[in-house]
Each structure stands twice: as C-alpha cells, then as structure tokens.
Length: 366
Image 1: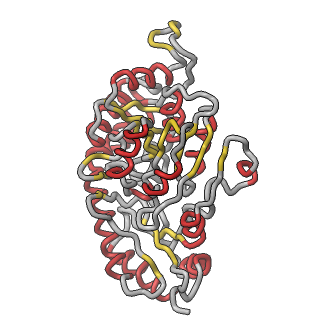
Image 2: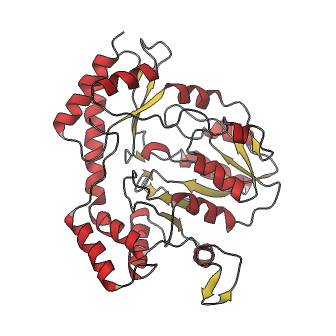
Image 3: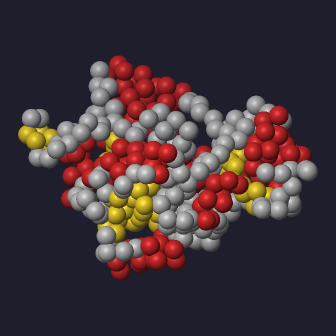
C-alpha cells in the first residue's frame, strides 16, 4: 500500500534525541529555544514561541487578544475542527465565510460581505500547504481594524509574494505526526510583535515570568526538549523535502492533466506551495463520485484521505451551539463532498508516483 503520508526519522534525529536523554533536560529547555530560533528564520518573523500542539497555538494566539463575549472571529468552514474549537475556547463567537475552489481558502469577496461591527479577528486557514489570498485579505483586515490569526498548521514554509505564511499576523503552526515538519505533537506561534510574543511565553508557563511570580492566568502549554529534538534536525533539510513534494506534485499534475472529471490542484500565481496534501476535486459531471474513487484506489493499494468530509459546523455538537453562526457556504459544502487527497509526500519514489497516476486513471473510468 502506498500510504497517504509517511513518517521516518534519520540517524541525525536519533542522535539528537539520545543527546537530550543523556543530558537529563527533557522538559522545555535549550533545544526548544534552538527550535524556536530556527523556525522563526524559516517563517521570517522576529519571534517563534513553541507550544505543545497546533490547537494550543490557536488557543494561545486568541487568548492574548483579550476577546470578550460577543466578539466574533471570522473564519472558513472548510478546515479541521481545531480551528473552531480554539475560537470557542476563547469565549468568542465563530462566524463563517465561504471559500474559493481554486485554493480551498477564504474568498476575500465573501469575507468583505461577512465582516460586521462585532468582528474582531480574521482567521484564514492556509490549507493543504498553500496560503490564502493574503494580498486581498490583509488590506481588508487593516481597513476594518481586525486582528489576523493565521491557521498555518499545514503551511510550514509556504509563501505569498515571497512573504512567509505565519508572518502576516499571528501565525499558528502544528507539528503533528503527519505534518511536513513533525515533532509528533507540538505547535508554534509566530509574530513580529515583541509584546505579543512575551505574553504568549508567559501564558504557556502557567502565567509565570519567573518561578512563582504570576502575571496572568496561564496554562501549561510548553513544548519539551524531547519534542524539539525531533524537529531540530528536520529544519536543516526541510527545504529539500519540500522540493521533493513539489516534484511529486508536478509529476502527478502531468500524469493526470487529461483525466476527464478530475480537477487538479495548482500552485497559484505568487504563492509558494509546500504540498502538504495533493487534493483533487471530482467535477459534478465526473463518471464516478469521490467515495467510489477512494474505494477503487484502495483496491489498487493506493492510500487516500478525505480532508474534510463536511463543513466544520455540520455536526450535532455545533449545530445548536449559541456561539456558532452557520450561514450558507455553498462552495465549501460542495467541495467537502467532492474532494480527495492522494499521496504526494517526500518518501514517494518515481515508481510510486507512476503507480498512483496509473491507479487514478484506471479508477476514473466509468
């Protein structure tokens, strides 16, 4: 089976982890600091503050904005549930704008229509490794006085007009096991704002700047040196891994470009895609549906994944929630029924990519 994702660590990671174990410093320490420094350089920000998950990164970013009951966060309905859960954790209300099919991200024209007097935060999600249209979203946010929190969980190293995802507002990244850069669990908040970075650091450490000197109500959001030891060696080779993903994506696009009923993802002008996922859409007139394609690929030992099968608010626990405002989002609803991700990860061989192309082409025949 060619898996939808692949996780492997080299001897450099083993050495780094062993060094940490022998040092006796396994909680947050010097390796977390080194990881933060290296990740800030990758993103292009003054600060990167490590936390224990991507969800925690979103929670921390929203908490330091001091949102009040009735404040609204405007985001996409086509995302992982962590985006919505973080908003609810902050005490704010979640409101949704529709997406564009070309980038799976917030449609700036729809966003402009959805902003109201209660909107405090705009939260774009950079899905599958490509940024949202930050060239349109940032001027809109600035003109309306909105804070920007970027859910960049899948976009490590992605760019818009040369500027890194996570460097436009408060960036929130995940290092979950399947991400392009992983520490098994872990996250990062990135910012150029010295005061905001300081608040996140205090917040993640139970509100303490120094031991038993509490400045705010905080949490234990800390990353460990063991986690950082997994990530540190990957930083040095990360751009090479992204290049492998880009080659695989181009080979998939070339091999599948003439398949009837299959809409392929692309790297849009001015955007640097890091190809966390290669997500196709089944056209309305496709000879088969998404679920049939997934089943047929599995029969041919090619893995696939549906990210995501519903809009995020379309679950019983959110439908009647008083702080979840679900207005119609027809593009997101349609894409959720028709999207399928196929393998694009850096561990694929040329033969693997050829097998994937052949399997998709065969599976798409009526």
